[in-house]
Image (cartoon, rainbow, N blue to C red; front, side, top):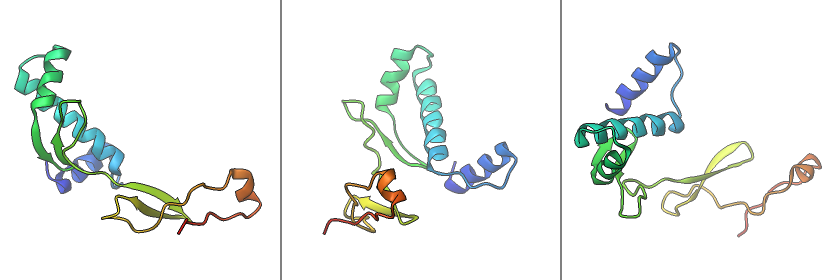
Length: 121
């Protein structure tokens, strides 16, 4: 399904007008990959299905699917985010970066005393 179709299916299944987050999309894409691998392998044997997963290459509503020889998903790039002052900031990769990584973050005890995180320049 397309992104719009996935969102509509998600809302229909949930029975609420809630837009799915990336966790839901990732889970949905994983189920889609499993179904495609089972269909491709015509088997439910886990070893056979695992081999089929490694041979799949497709584009889904979540992005590309491609597994390298080490079993790593390499079909699309993810971003690393960090919450800074109540806002989600992309800190990696640099091509998508919307702010600098704040590290180290203050402890909860320090935050309670008003200590703010400051990005390293």
